[in-house]
Image 1 (cartoon, rainbow, N blue to C red):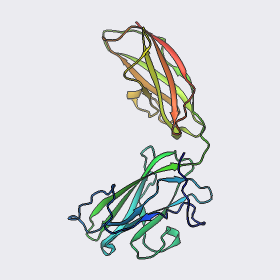
Image 2 (cartoon, one colour):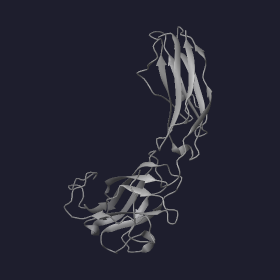
Image 3 (tube, rainbow, N blue to C red):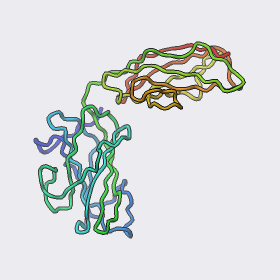
Image 4 (tube, helix red, strand yellow):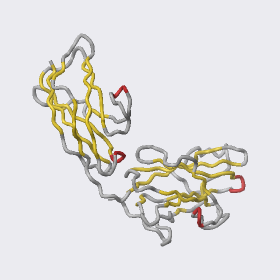
Length: 275
């Protein structure tokens, strides 16, 4: 379970209020922190571990405190989801203007802030914020990375897999043989809730698990995976059957999907004979 994040301001349900102070404080995730290049340092940084979606106010106030603000030109942030996708289409500029619209509390105190709306359909998982600034010399630095866990507060339903397409028999040939595999995946929470689609192979004659398990299936539209259309819920992969070194006999392949809440789908068991 994610730790609940509570706000001190009733009108700003997800306002990030926990700050740790100290001009000489060391932060583990500081980037480009070579003071010979620039004179701006971090005075305060976000200190939160989790954020829960709030339907009454979905905005989150992102902020960072910096020293030597006289040389700062711009401060901005990029927000990345658990899928490592950037949520903002343009930089989220942060302001030290004391205005409620940006979530900034005190003008000129060196703490730069702005609101960013979170969507309930963003997937659960580990998120991160990358902070940047530029100074009056047009020097740009990626100064801090901060991670947190996002909970979209939706009831989590397990995925469902169906319509498996895979041959019953495959033959070892004089050249590498390709086995095309695909199946449909449905998740009531949306396809972005799918963390992994895969199968495990069990080898004859004793049914021992393959050391290569699990074998992943993809919905990325890439020919190398045998997938035709990205994002259509049809997951695919191609298994290469080499010319030698393969144990012949009947294999058991067990197909499953796992969502970001770690719930597993139904399991489809398929037997394929390699001759």
